[in-house]
Amino acid sequence: MTGAALADPPLVGAITVGGERLLQQRCDRESFAEYRAAGGYRNAVRGAGVLRELSVAGLRGRGGAAFPTAIKWQAVAERPGPRHVVVNAEEGEPASAKDRWLLRHRPHIVVEGALAAASAIGADTIWIYVADRPAAESAREAAAELRADTSLGPIPRINVVEVPHTYVAGEETSVVRAIDGGPALPTTKPPRPFERGAAGSPTLVQNAETLAHVALIVRSGAKQFRGAGSNTAPGTLLLTISGDCIRPGLVEVATGTRLREVLALAGGVRGGGAPAGFAFGGYFGGIAGPRTVDLPIEHDALRTEGIGLGCGAVIVLGTHRCVVAVAATIGKFFAAQSAHQCGVCVRGTAAIQGALERLRGGRADPANVEQLQRFAGLVRGRGACALPDGAANVVESLIREFPGTVADHVGRVCLRCRLPVDDVIPNLAARPVTSGARPEETRSREESQ
Amino acid sequence: MRVQVDAVKCVGNGTCYEVCPSVFAIDDWGYAYAEADGQVLPDDEPTVREAIQACPEMAISIVPD
Ligand SMILES: Cc1cc2nc3c(=O)[nH]c(=O)nc-3n(C[C@H](O)[C@H](O)[C@H](O)COP(=O)(O)O)c2cc1C
Ligand code: SF4
Ligand code: SF4
Image (cartoon, rainbow over the protein chains, first blue to last red):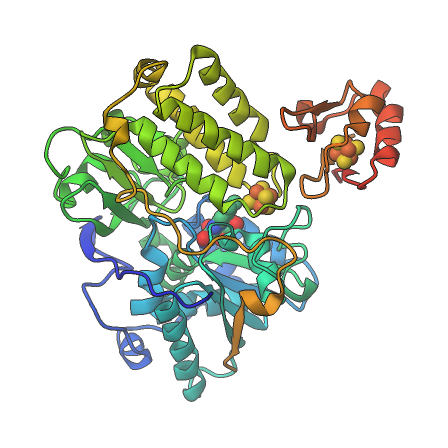
């Protein structure tokens, strides 16, 4: 099942000096000619110079882990070729919409970043990896537009790979496996893609937004890039703000911006009052309390508070929401999205789901809360991928940020818990294909060059 | 020496724990993991190697430095 088209996220605005870098108020698609006329594909920096500039820029990945890009590129570049670059736009977090917005509306800024990466690390193949059909079509068109223009000189092959939209399909080893014709399911590490990736070659897997920032770094330089944002994680980042706010959509902010400002830009909490909390990072980063509005939106600052920024999806939970119901719904999501490859993940996420449902249903005793915490500790770091850690994050953040609410649920039925939260905690259409699936069922590959 | 249990391969028959309980533990669902992030004290190395040999799924490996 490939090719589902998701809703197009509206744009909310920007909070950064100098205005938007990646977002543009547009409903249409930026063509090659338009992008070029606005200064695209004219980068003076190529080859090794890109890596130097990137290192000074201090760009960190926008796919979830905020890993320094220059270090990853170096690791791929120093291994013998051939090498590959993958644009990871699968965007498995259900509440995130930034990568599909970029590919649908500004495909060339992403592709230019991928070309710069390929030139820096000496890669001869670029893969654009997507789940969203309109994004895939836009990427294919971008590749065709580039092919039709000879002024750029020789460029790497650009292939578009479409996979079903599942949570684990965007994990880097799933990406490599699907590109090679297998199911989009994680494999045990090591080896990581930088060691052995697509076709067994060293492969740079980079988030689509990360590469869009690269395009601006090669165009305007590291100094300009560092002109916004914090010192340790500079630049701007895209946030998808959703849930109980008046104007959900995409926001571009300088790192370090307070969540309070973003919430104000999004029109504040729907229904008024203070938020009950926020679900962070999509679902992976845990649930944070109302205090979060005064924290800077920056990976490291949030990390020290036990919150994961992830790929920048923030779900506002209105006053009327019960965070236990939200946690139980996210717990159920992780159990359903387990790829059923690792025993500990299958059983552990199901156990967490069950225990959270118990708490939501007023059927938990104090020992069950301890057991829940124990389950979280038992699954962390154990799976072939980090999906079980996502389930652990939800549990641990709930108990840490909302101890009073959790205690109130022990042996007591909460009426607010009965309200469904599916409207703010959406599901995915597809479930991961369990191992043993035939490759043809899970991918469609378009060679565009 | 550091070891890891491959979660995809482990079927949870508990052999590693029987052979080397000071390093391997069994979770609530029967699957194995290496304690202390897989760090093995020199004294435990011989029994860990035995457990690696004994695992029917070849799920235990030494993590390269
Ligand atoms: C379960 C799981 C799902 C992931 N899904 C995505 C995804 O949809 N998109 C993405 O860019 N990275 C995803 N990642 C992170 C990738 O493995 C990888 O680190 C990332 O694409 C690297 O890009 P970056 O360094 O630019 O962030 C996922 C990781 C895990 C553990
Ligand atoms: S940890 Fe879970 S989701 Fe990840 S590979 Fe194993 S079974 Fe699949
Ligand atoms: S011996 Fe192997 S399969 Fe059995 S529990 Fe230990 S690691 Fe798992």
